[in-house]
Amino acid sequence: MPFAAAVEAGAASVMTSHLMVPAIDPRHPATLSAPVLDLLRSGLGYDGAIVSDALDMAGASGERSIPEAAVAALLAGVDLLCTGPDKDAALVREIQAAIVRAVRVGRLPLERLVDAADRVDRLPRTVARGTTSSGSWHLEPRQMVAVARRACIVEGPLPDLTGAVVVSVATEANIAVGAGRWGIDPEVTVREGEALPDGPLVVQVRDGHRRPQVAAMLAAASGPVVVVEWGWPGPRTGWEDAPHPRLCTRGNGRPSIAAVEEILREAGWQR
Image (cartoon, rainbow, N blue to C red; front, side):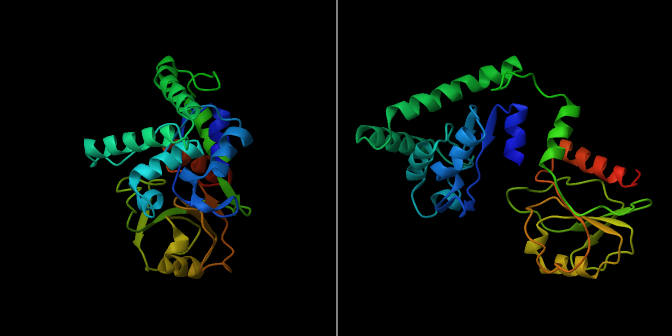
């Protein structure tokens, strides 16, 4: 859904993640998977640039060298290769040499490189003009909020949130997200494992299914409670029987925050 919303909005570029999607490709992470990336091209009609996440991450190169990951990404359909900021020029030359070898032995079609180079060449000119791959103008803030709302999953009807307090459960950020603001500005912040106040509440969490203490907090919370998952929208591990509806945002940018606030206001929340 978030990729469909981005394509519909005319995104100039899309970044892959190194996650596994076994229902589509049980062998390769998305960055190195032609079947997964074909969903963008053929399934969603996306013609912009596909950018890899950092290829030195273990998800891409843990079982292969970084240059080999670069070749595999190009073969899968990636147009612009990315490595982490702490890598030196020697690695870039190794990647370049691996690509040249792959072309010379017939493993990597030259046409694939020409296609990738064309999309990368179009990217700065597209952004500078203020147009996207679909020809549309840059999105206005209202449009961005609408796109973020379409990408948001709403699980269950929301209760009356009149007088609801926004509570954030403070957890350590992962390396991909880092420190910084996330979610709606809370009125109350509690540590992982602490008891939540009585409802009505809007409880903000990150990667709740990966944190048993957070799951226990949600299972014990007295309603009405709405859970907003700003991290990975995994299963309700540990609080499956709790009746709380949940919003899974699939993003934490300002448009996503505004979209969640909009949804909550429709249920009576006021700020």
